[in-house]
Length: 566
Ligand SMILES: Nc1ncnc2c1ncn2[C@@H]1O[C@H](COP(=O)(O)OP(=O)(O)OP(=O)(O)O)[C@@H](O)[C@H]1O
Ligand SMILES: [Mg+2]
Image (tube, rainbow, N blue to C red; front, side):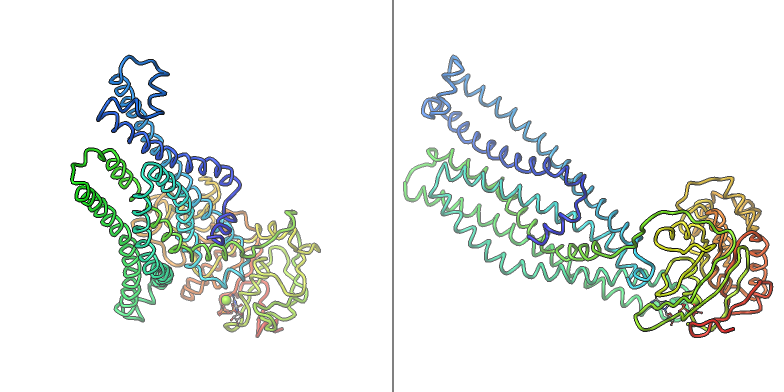
């Protein structure tokens, strides 16, 4: 519990912490209201049964005298109305409390998800590639929800434990012996159930997280490799895998829910059978009717009706905390990820020359992927990079784009070194066009403006520049959806959308990583010459495995095992 609270403390933002006192206050007021409700019911029943009881109860007789009401009957009527008003108030308070608690828990969920998302997109590229993206998705969406749920459960635990304490004190006050006797029996049984059941619940919690993770992985890898799936593997194999994991997921969830319901049922049955047995015992030993103890019995029955949900909520809360413990660990780990640190936001301009000076880089220590690379690129030059697979071409492109950082050596832009002061400005000049351009579910215009404010005129200019405007307008316009029901784009057209994106972003340096490798030679050549045509005032650095399509480039560099092959 301590470690859970520590993690949650870390995850709470300033605003969350500011709201916390109100939430805690309400959580403590609620049990007090419940206690008052219960304690006023008992005297009311006793005076309603016999008005003269007003005079026997010291508190009631005090108020009766104080208020100078003409008869005990009117006083009882007055009490009844007061109690009705109190219970209406209690209802509103409970509704309000439910609203506040849910608002707080889900806003916590939102703020945790936002923090983790922010962390994940601020990871350095190399750190990002070391992580599994479906894990990250799961952490942002599911684990944040679980953590918020743990927090909700801790609050519930506080509230319901206080309810229990308050009601228990009321019962103790009215009949100490019976209360203690009932407690010992119920507690013993609860403890036994708890010991048997809760360890299991924790286990299922861990297994559930694992199987859910596997399910996400199967889903992501199937959708991401759809063509591969169609051609290479048989659907039955992946379906079997999915079925196995979802069966595990089902069993873990189902057992969790099932086990959680046991304590409530047992305690409910136990409490009411004990109550009946108690009455029977009383009648048997006293040989009389139960009218004399009817008020006490009413009190106990009402108390049980309020206590049992309380007990089951406490049990639920404990299980929820145990069940979702792992989510907090996962979040804690995600929260302490190292993100990129920028020491400043200096602006950088590219006017004449980009110089790479003795760049060495390795993803892992002692293994250098790029070795001692020196290279000059003039503004608006068109540079082609060729080389065998694994030679380091993409890595070189990433170094140029400032996405990965050299282990040694410098990158100079017009003599100014790129460092953490100005790297963001440098990156903003880069338009990266990958091998396969990812188009998300949205309109063509949204896919081009990508997270930036939408400027229709500019979108059209960019589409025109990449020779797509006519096609798009003939097929429904720039607001048509990409994907399933909308416009279908060929590989080359997607590539052009990628270039339009870079243009929209005012990129000055285009980095193309095998951008045309999905096309046949004729189309690839055509795209490349189109790119060259629209980028006369851009610097273009393009990787291709086919040297022939780069024939119009100013300079071709061959990379071989991490070095430039002159
Ligand atoms: N994120 C990464 N983490 C660790 N090693 C990596 C990573 N990316 C690439 N490498 C390694 O660095 C080397 C160079 O990879 P790179 O992607 O730069 O080659 P490439 O020339 O672009 O190859 P290809 O033509 O196949 O795309 C390879 O040996 C590769 O295994
Ligand atoms: Mg590559």
